[in-house]
Amino acid sequence: MNPQAKLVFTISLLLGTTITISSNHWITAWAGLEINTLAVLPLISKSHHPRAIEAATKYFLTQAAASTLILFSSMTNAWCTGQWDITQLTHPTSCLILTSAISMKLGLAPFHFWFPEVLQGTSLITGLLLSTTMKFPPITLLYMTSSSLNPTLLTTLAILSVAVGGWMGLNQTQIRKIMAFSSISHLGWMAIIISYNPKLTLLNFYLYTMMTAAVFLTLNSIKALKLPTLLTSWAKSPALNTALLLTLLSLAGLPPLTGFLPKWFIIQELTKQDMALAATTISLLSLLSLFFYLRLAYCATITLPPHATNHMKQWRTNKPVNFSIAMLTTLSLTLLPMSPMILTII
Image 1 (tube, rainbow, N blue to C red):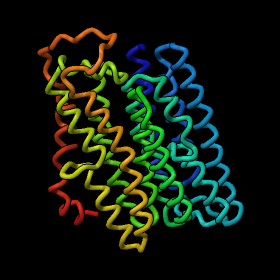
Image 2 (spheres, rainbow, N blue to C red):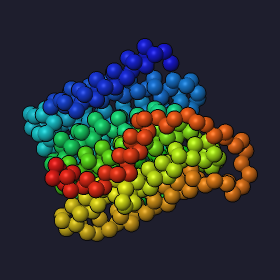
Image 3 (cartoon, rainbow, N blue to C red):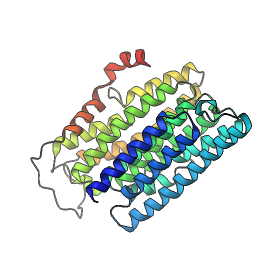
Image 4 (tube, helix red, strand yellow):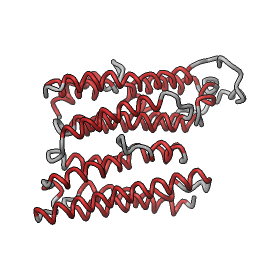
């Protein structure tokens, strides 16, 4: 892709995100979401492969439908209450439509079907954008309207997302699809707590973004797209693969790594809200995700593949590890001791 075109699309992405997260009016928030969608479409389809074109088409149709629903819910609310302010969403029907629209934007179950297919058709870097940056504006809208939304509906969607993300990721061999189901599962953790403590949702999102960025950049560095390729990547860069193992375990939420921090806070908050059953259910369902993280980690760090693969053994390279990967991996592993300070902030 032309560097000037890429720069224009990147600036448009930043502009769309900034407009949405800083707006108080529904129309400007909707306009920001549309700018975001139109800016990311050329990045998805830049390889001109049929899978990439299919992914871009699916992404466009889903996001257009979700944006239409957001506009419809805000217009319904304005018609009934006379308010266009985002925080003044009070009409029950509007709240219901908005929850569906943002679930579709984010890829929460049962509106998740587009996300693994779109991620599978893109490059790893574009997949990272779709999994992190493109989720920020809808999460912000959810944060601003959290006091108006139905907690029971959000809890149901959240538990369903964690279950679907865990179950459907078990049998995958494509790494991008595994990361898509991982994203769906993490979104479930964010959705379950947003009605009770919205700041915890944002904390979870920031830490998830950091850990996912570390995983995607590492996979991009070792050029791994599926599990058989990952099996032979140890010889290429042992240090990077060891870091990948630890980052995946952090993403799974194992103590004493950073990923345990948001899960711990969310379970604690749910227990305070007399939702021990929901906390127990979501904790048990997250064990499904742990299985495929362990599977990825096992494939990344095994030194001898258990069977003959069609891939040639990689030569070990002395290329230094990218600074951004090193920084993100360090943060993904070592933030748990800072939890008392984070608790005082939120």
